[in-house]
Amino acid sequence: MAPSFSPLKVEGTIRHPAIGETWEYSVMLRVRNDRGEEVSRQVVGVGALQPTEQRTFTLEVEVFTPDVEAQ
Image (tube, rainbow, N blue to C red; front, side, top):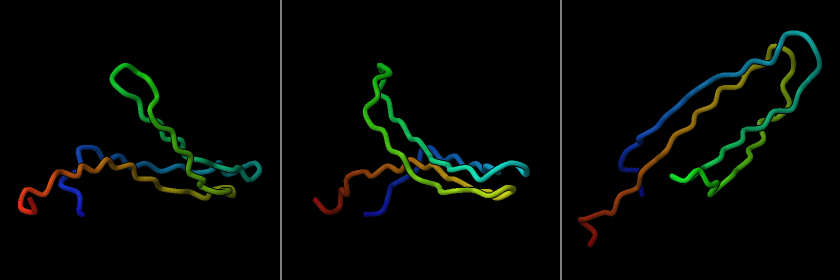
């Protein structure tokens, strides 16, 4: 099933500082309801970045609506 639309898409890039040691990076995604209560949490390992290495991330919320024609 393909998504019907995407109401949110955010992209960003991080670059490890040019000086210093290798650091380990992770992406933490938290989803909260309208009362601010956490309903989901996911951690995604990015890996170790060497000085001046960079990674680009895209967060996208996809919506899947009922297929009216299939009913």
